[in-house]
Image (cartoon, rainbow, N blue to C red; front, side, top):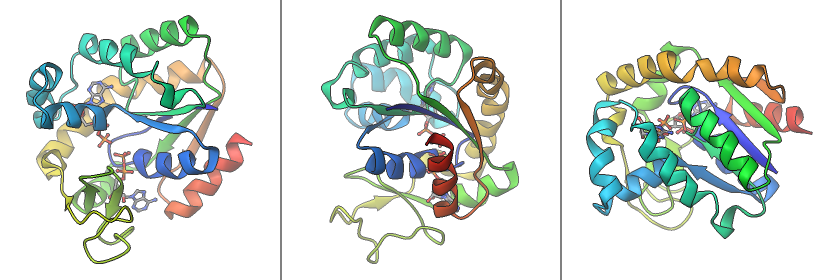
Length: 213
Ligand code: ADP
Ligand code: ADP
């Protein structure tokens, strides 16, 4: 099964993707995670992407599309994937169509997660990430199982630099301007589920699963 999840920063895309991967035995393809890995390792791509990410802007389409061409062919996605954070522009969505066609794949469902902006700031300020496995937590709504320790056993749980309030506000503006047009784009193609993400995370998950099956 191949899925795509779209929503503003903090909507719960990463959280729901993790749960969907477990349920359907598919792999998460999160462009933000791949980019952060490249920034940390100071690769050519990381050096080019770093300043855009730090200021809450989108990394240029060309860099992202080239990155995706390599990524989507990896064997780990052969059994299915959930795209989280890509596409983020109409140009990226057009490029995805071409890539899928080339590799004989289709999207089974496009999940749109809706959360009002005022809820986003609170979610982002409490977001924490495991440096080892990238699992997402929230200090109140989804705390790590043991104090400061991820379920993978690692105890290096950190806060992203771009989760500070002024960068989150910028990222929400970028979402409204550049990514939200994708909702209409995919509506016109069918196969979409619009889900209220402003709900308990298990309730959101159940609604997504019901809309898929
Ligand atoms: P969130 O989950 O909070 O929406 P991500 O981890 O997906 O954030 O992305 C973090 C940053 O990485 C974005 O603000 C942007 O700078 C960059 N990024 C990630 N995916 C893309 C993409 N598809 N196109 C352009 N930039 C991207
Ligand atoms: P995204 O990938 O869309 O940027 P995340 O999955 O990282 O969003 O979620 C953002 C923050 O909100 C995280 O700290 C996460 O634990 C928390 N969160 C996710 N879903 C919910 C929910 N339904 N209710 C409350 N908090 C949530």
